[in-house]
Image (cartoon, rainbow, N blue to C red; front, side):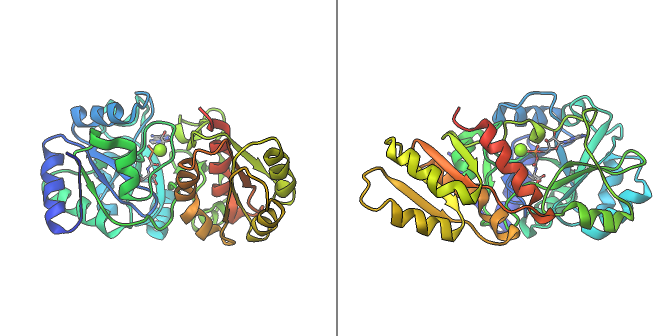
Length: 338
Ligand code: TXA
Ligand code: MG
């Protein structure tokens, strides 16, 4: 039986499961994570089995406080100190040189480790209780099956993983809604490996220098595969200005649709398609990047569940605050429909 719980008793239960090498899903401010004792290779192997994830994709180790990074890395460069001081606890993952304590399962065989100190109060309570029980960090990828949409609620985790997870801690809807920003701070120049809601401008301001983009020689990041975060329904990503015409053409061919676009485009489409038989659902997209990110995965799941023949999503605006959302949408469109 799958358990979904919250509160202090649930934290105690979670820690005892983690100590026994079991998996516990927990909320973070970004998305839900599938956690295991990062120091227990058998438990870490269980994560890969539950997700159906390739073995060579490294995991992020979540820590209770910045002081705990010393267990997992022997080398915290000044640049990392600055970013930790500015953004932790929060949605930023730092790639650092790994210590001997990091198992090969966690690092995917690389000489680095991803570390993150999440801000969600339930994650913090869990990590602190785990630390007090001798668990120095939780290895946790997003709590979805490999390649699918990250979960932003306890119900999403249950839908993704079912009985593959012993316990799901319920911390409500995730505030940020998309995965953390990942920055590699092992070299002279900080490199942005995965965009997130802490954007490049804010990172550069805190780092005191511009960031390089993660190039072809960057360490493997499964979230950087072109097909990722994908719904099972086919998905077209189109300019908002073209959306109504494209949708009308498809409806005219007898396709059923679900549309996520500006409130104006959704309203125009709904009035133009009146009288047509094909189902066409419309959801108005939030106008701010933060709200959009918060809604994105929940909306993709909701639209995917409608079982229409196609999703049509309007490209969000340009601008640095939209980079992470545009990144996730492009990957979702690439992997959709399989
Ligand atoms: O917001 C998040 O980061 C969420 C929550 C649960 O913390 N976690 C998450 O984990 O998104 P996951 O495994 O779904 O994505 C982590 C990404 C993967 O693409 C992985 O390849 C990359 O981080 N990663 C982890 N360790 C790395 C390392 N040492 N070098 C390069 N990339 C690394
Ligand atoms: Mg993931």
